Amino acid sequence: MRINIQLQCTECKRKNYATQKNKKNTTGRLEVNKYCPWDKKHTVHKETK
Image (cartoon, rainbow, N blue to C red; front, side):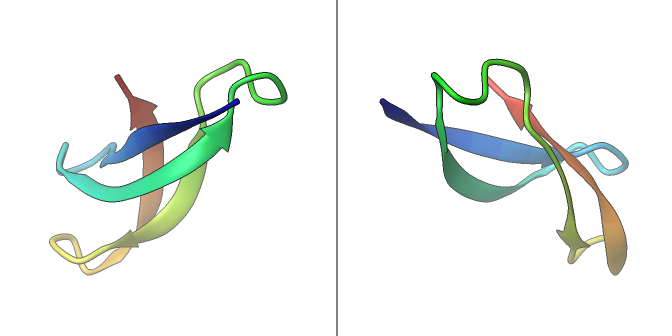
């Protein structure tokens, strides 16, 4: 079962990306290193509710 999630930057606290994840395979919160256009650098983005 795939669900839609939002990824939030840990530095500027903005929701920059939307993606999907498989809830059965990835039970914890997703953390991805992605580009933040407001900080103009790569930062860690965490899954939000």
